[in-house]
Amino acid sequence: MKSWSRNVKKWILFLKITGILVILCMIAGACILYAAENHIQLLKNNLSNEVWESGCEWVWQQIFPLSMDLTGKHSNQTLQTQKKWSSINTMDPAYDQYEKAREFYRTHEYLAWIGEDESDEETIRSASEEALDQSENANSPANTDSASAKISDQPMIYPMQQLMDYDFLMKHFYNVHTSTTADRELMNAKNLLSKDLTLEKEDAPQILIYHTHSQETYADYAAGNKKATVVELGNRLTALLEEKGYQVLHDTTSYDMAAGKLDRNHAYNYALDGIMGILQKYPSIQVVLDLHRDGVKENLHMVRTVNGKATAPIMFFNGMSQTPEGEIEYLKNPYKTENLAFSLQMQLLAEEKYPDLTRKIFLKGLRYNLHVRPRSALVEVGAQTNTLEEALNAMEPLADLLDQVLGGG
Image (cartoon, rainbow, N blue to C red):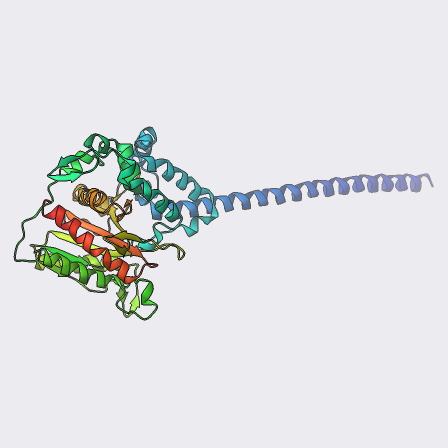
């Protein structure tokens, strides 16, 4: 009996110990599962963050490819350039905007919507269009000193001392996209205005007019006027310049069409091939003009009165071939300074003769085929909300401005 009682007690003790162990194992298991679940979630979050940050970085590098070297790492040169710009960012009013935009692109999921293509001029001024036009009144001579100065025998309504003020120059005559920069050394008004861009008239072709985006149309195109395209502007400008004694070649090739379909993604590449062939055939050509029309909000109708006519405004456009981090090595433009001089000289003449005609000169990061000649210009005439007649009316003052600069006044 005693032996049986001892066995029972042993079994009871064994069961108690086993129960305690089971409970402890359950508690330990629960703790392990909880920790594992949290760890897995943490890994998911970290992975998600890493993937997202990598995605943001990749998209950003498509916009500003120079910020990484060929190995995909930030190069020492890039980091030094960033430090350089960080220390002198007050030199360029666009740099703060660039930094803010860069931070926004890196941290917001809307980044994927910001992508731009170098061949799409219509996307350049979407968010800032209203601010652009509201600021145009600041260009009026009534808001500035009316003293005069002469550089290269071209009269101006602004004294050189005022134009040499970098902040004044940039505020009154330029809009700088956050994809590029315009530093003090480059934007030297005296240097730009002293460039001699005159040419002697010859019997051979001297001016080439073409259209990277030949399919850009005006408001009345939809109403059945199939001539309401930028090509018609080229026809009018050609005739006006020929009346002034210039030999003009108008290239009407549709560089934004491929296999019968609109293709603006490669339009600048196609156009470069085309115009280089023309320049090789006619080396006498010294002036290359790419006529466009802008794209704005549908409720915005930009119209001026010039010589008593309803006129679409014009805007000179310069490709800078550089981001705020430095020059784009594969998009060199040896004539960047001359291009800037060409647009600024016409802009200041317009201020005097046609004070309501021009919008601010627009600067953006890529090249836009402006490297082919020193006297190269991209000109945007009105927008899709203008009529063809309003755009055509802008050709007469544009021809006059070209003649003033090319003919020396």
